Length: 105
View (cartoon, rainbow, N blue to C red):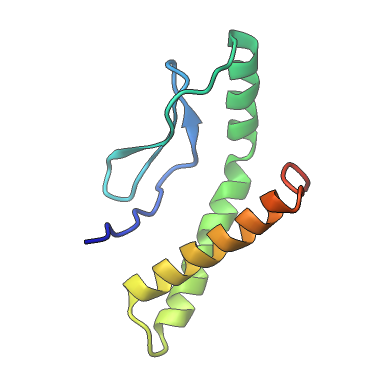
């Protein structure tokens, strides 16, 4: 049985062990990347970038929620709508990476 996706309540953070994590809507911490091989300076830069991007992450989350609410008003169940959103984002972002567009913006 496939697990239901957990919506993040926070943007991603880099912990002291170099793990990239977020807190889900259920209050649990979820691991995104197990261990980034970073020296102290690089880890601080990553943490700064993630913190600076927090507002943008909040906007993405709010827009995603608005989209989910609007589509749920139609014929689809919430779980189906969330799965559709995540699958679409995964496809779009994977296409960006495969075409060499990662890191632009």
